[in-house]
Amino acid sequence: MIESRHADHVAWLTLARPERGNALAEEMVEALIAALDSALADTTVHTLVLDAQGAHFCTGFDLGELPAGDAVAQTSGGTAHQGSAATDGPLLWRFTRIEHLLALLWHAPLRTVVLARGRVWGAGADLFATCDLRLATPEAQWRFPGAGFGLVLGTRRLAALVGQPQALAWVAEGRRIDAGAALAAGLASEIVPELPADIEALPALAVDRATYARLKAATRPDLRDADLAALVRSAAMPGLATRVQRFRQAAAQARAAPR
Image: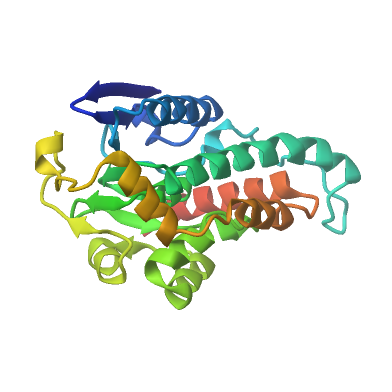
């Protein structure tokens, strides 16, 4: 699910699940965290590049791993039974691991670069937003739909890039963002005809890793605890699995509707 290589002080991590649009399966998130930990521990690495195989960078959280049909039983009034907490718990754990991954990238003590094409959606859009240098092709499109099932995940980091009003509108409305809008708002650093295949195509660093890490720390306050708390609070209401399942069903119906 993840391919990694090191060359010339650069660690490349490639999402390798193109048949699923590189959707973030549970094992894929854990593999990314492990690969990222390894790259961060290697002090010879000064740049980490995140890219993907296939037509899409990442289509988000893998909803296909959820059970088909309603995730939890509902009362006639539409309220989830108390037993749904047993279903919600593992799902919340998966989201907290994604938040941990995002925080690792946001605060990584080295330069991070992301190369994206196609759909950059949900947790994939959050991954994109955490990196220092964010390159995408002209047909790329972004979407932040997580608020559709009540989660607050990655929103503060997005606001740090594009400003609070723009981030709030994009997340609350779940709109699709094209390359022009992403570039104008600062979500994308650059729109390129082709994604670079090696480090020579990226801007060179004029400082060493330790200096870059200090510069980064000086410009990014450490709010990891607050970000995690915001996620957990947003998921605290029972019925998380049901809300995610309803979102999945609504998305499937929208895809099947005549155009």
